[in-house]
Image (cartoon, rainbow, N blue to C red; front, side, top):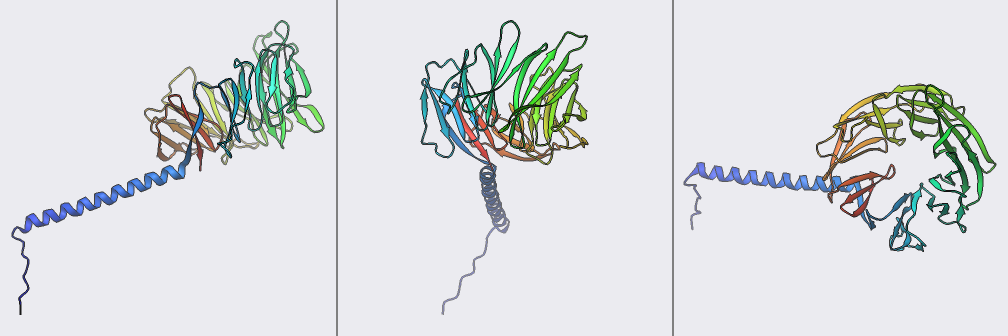
Length: 374
């Protein structure tokens, strides 16, 4: 009967060291695998990235269902639900401006305006200064004789439904909000004849019953920089204060001091409306200010300062949170300015643009990609 040989280590300390190195290598390998898994899982859970058929040099406009863009002398449409199908329209000139909202798009040049989908071209009767799109209407700001301007409101078929003159004050801006599913147009006029400038915001509601002026807001001793709508409120960011007005009676509910800061973004996608402000007269701030306040009679305002990560080139509020973007990563903060996550980008980017509360446009050189957030 053969005896079983015993294996005896000649150098026990050397053997133990080899075993420790082997165990350490296995631990590091497992940790690396876990890190890669978590990174990939983090990327997948953050959002999906899709390349777009146009470049940063092409005019484009975003809607909830896709992008309109101008390429090769054509107006084209990239549909999120059917990206392979790209309907197009020949343009007589590419010297046009392209604008859109979530559901309406228009192009304009000189005195001509075309609502995408309408049969007839609109002749505004004068130089078009700007066009704003709502959910069912567009507003055309037209230069009249002298310094006067007029805002012409059309439905999506191109029918004129309202004409608003400037009056004695200078009409300087207009835009749309939505309340109760109806388009609400706001116009901003500025009177400078007195000792202090007076800004007046006038709102008009458009429904199946017709057009009606619905409110007037007057601000003295400060200029208006941003007008934002929620279901219950009109928020006005001025050079001194952020003010909330009730949409029904346009009366001031409260104001929050923002002197020294300028507005840069707004989202109503969280528990409370969230505003982004940056220091005035600073092109590359090292920190930004977040202000969340209630969509109610009392402000319940919370102000937080957030230091931007090194290398940040883009930042915005989106879906009730704040995001800062570097060449390689997206940093996500909650409304209180607390860092929640850091997500490495699959493709480095040179610029990020908020499109909506669920989509971000990422640019790498001339290449464009859209990220749909999860």
